[in-house]
Length: 440
Image (tube, rainbow, N blue to C red; front, side, top):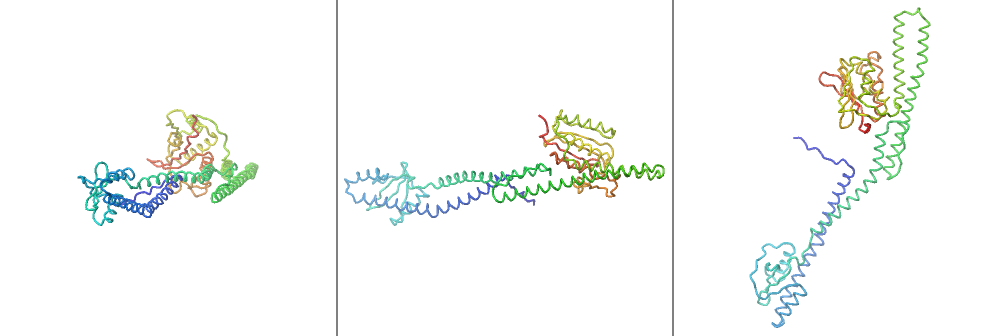
């Protein structure tokens, strides 16, 4: 039998409010129980005893008065105590199972008079038949006389508790969420560049420690990436000098070199030159031009036409022209690298497609090559990682093309992902441009 999924609120405000609300509910229930057990119940019992004593005393006093004074006493009872005393026994409807304060009053009367006392209702009053001095007197009183209102207390406690919990949780969450939200936004925007702005280290001690750790980590990552970029750019640049000397020596040797050997050396040097060029491009990948506004479909179609590859086709599934504002040079390099990768390893036609989705505009490069195993789909974006492990540049490439794509997409806030091309095999590289780049 499948287990039900555990539903957990996502927002910190809701989680805090829920926790405080459950805690407040438990406290309220315990408070109501304690209030009922140690305050309301004793007071209600004492109130019933006092009311029973008053009723018995009233009837006893009426019996002991001379007949001519009784009407005045009856009037005094009504005006002072809101009690109606009737010496004439009328036919009234009995109350079968009185509850609450009436049950306590009936029990107190029965205990005080040492015999069962019945309660009746009539004329919008509750009546007690009290035997006194050989006669049965009917004494009427208001039905809600001495009754408590515990549900009103519960309602007040819950309403006040809900308001207090809401504002308390709102205050707590605001003090916690604002620094956390700043850290989260900085972490999402952080791309390892030198323009990182330190977050203010203020607030509670734990948040200060978190912010300080994040600032330190971001600075160390920025320094590491800067050193890596400088090293890679320096090595790629400096290796061009001995490579140029090798070309010069090869040219000066002239006919003394075997033509086959010369050809192999030239091909190797061309491959080294291409690898060094890609290394330099990878090193300066984060600085790819300024933002410009272009019509996306027309720009991508022109990009395909400049490739002069008959197996490369363009498809637009946009409902109409879409203008975007972004770094055009970065977009061109991303798309060109993906197309070159598909042309190198794919079979049959390669399609560059652009379409619209709920998350933004999607640029896809689809090929019919051997595909990439799912376990390798994240690794292919790492620098110098190649599925073909012979280390041959001819068969395995340099291992930098997709790394440059990943680096540029991360720097621009785009998303790149690799999926399988269904219905015949192959790969689909998808670059998602967020809605924020679409011009109004």
